[in-house]
Amino acid sequence: VPLQAYGGGLVQAGGSLRLTCAISRRTFNKYVMGWFRQAPGKEREFVAALSRSGANTYYSDSVKGRFTVSRDNGQNTLYLQMDNLKPEDTAVYFCAADERVIQSYLRVPSQYDYWGHGTHVTVSS
Image 1 (cartoon, rainbow, N blue to C red):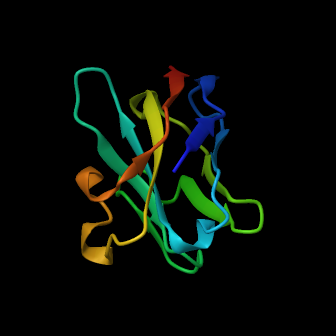
Image 2 (tube, rainbow, N blue to C red):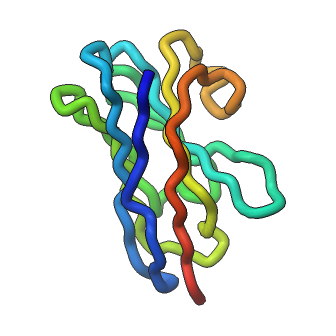
């Protein structure tokens, strides 16, 4: 399943960015979608996830209240609105998709079968 994430860049602390992930699949609404990030020298970590319908959202504690995940099933697109960015948000951000991942494992990268190329986000202090 081809995934393409984009929208990263350099932003000052307190600023905003919106990441977009396009999926080339007509059956987009069959996939649970997730955002993960990986900072230099660190393991890939969960950021946010969204159920197939978009009705249920899940966030890591570190981004809750600052990031918003959403999807447009008609446009086969996933979004991550990132507000009040902090230097510790600096990382490569990845979108991921899976048809079978269950709620208990949404935060586990290995549970997702499909990954896009990352997009770099750098937050300066």
